[in-house]
Image 1 (cartoon, rainbow, N blue to C red):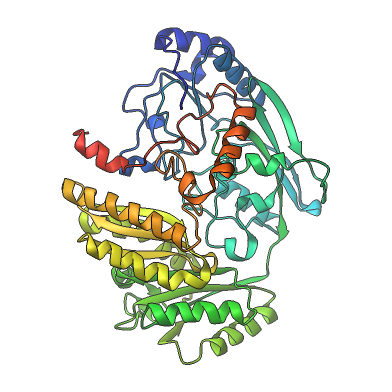
Image 2 (tube, rainbow, N blue to C red):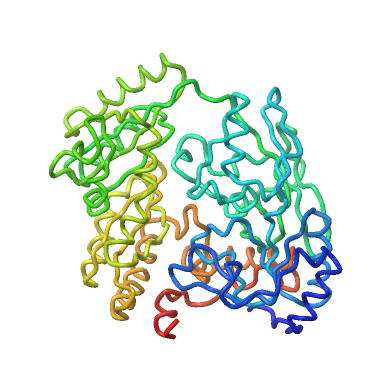
Length: 485
């Protein structure tokens, strides 16, 4: 259960925190403040902070957590606010600790392939600095201009390149972190190998601010590939698309991206597709499944991989396209959420994972679930690792549709567990999926999770109500509508 918040009057709270980090960096938050929510506000997830603190150094973060722990005040860490599960929403009040001022890159050593940015450095800045020095930071979650590297680590964010290069945690050598009741320490380092103790670094990666507050990250980098070639493969339908995925992976190819769009998602995005023959006229009529396949390496390697890709898909493909502008292609792909939201005013999209060998079955059964509830559905995501954004389109003014979306979501999560998948692939658990760990993991495993939480945060003040909270997870969008918000 979450802690009972110590309801210190906001005015006093602001004064106390101002003494720690300066009055200019403590905000008395109105109900409508952006710090009360993240991008899951589209689903109605919103908290109400009593104050927002913007510490400017790891030592100030340490002092802030120490004060909150002494006074039993909940503390919600926040990065760029781009999360989609309510992980940064202060649902139990207290203090939001925004890390946006921690913007220094303390070390950048290109010859050693490594960088040490503070938690508030934007993801795009990490990517840019690496690229300018001939290096590569592959994790590319959405909203890279706004998302921050600390938040990426806290959620273990993924993205299209995870199929070859792994999620954010795969690039983390060590962390600087503030732990309860107020200690600043380094976990991990630059050593290439270290099996000397329990893997505390991996425990903190993906912990969503429930175990500690990340203030800096030791990142491993790689030399940048000389060439990256995206190829779009269109097919008639789901069966052909899933067979194509199996052939690509079974052939031994290691694409750097293997994304998919199917059904309504592809149909709705087709008019704006920037193909080799122009915008909107390159998607073949009747195509219901598309793969975005990127191969990278030297020019010779890319040429060979492209040839092997086409050979592996012989007999399945309606059309193979090589858009001349890779940037335009990715902007088109990244626009899927806005396009789908605009169809009926809102969408409910769940981030789930199916085992790759059961992807086709998972997609088919999700479509059946949505249809049984009278909802239009579509799916897209990262085919290479089975990560699906299973989506239904809804009118947010119609409570019955939100009820139907809730019911469809409940069935989807049961399906995911039945097929041996995961309830969260790259967006985290946060608030909107609280309580669902129990459906996926054995009881003893959940107990071990809770014991770990208790060891790191004995008072339960760090991001309370998230990750492990034992609550039913109704749709916050539905709750907001019911309450007239």
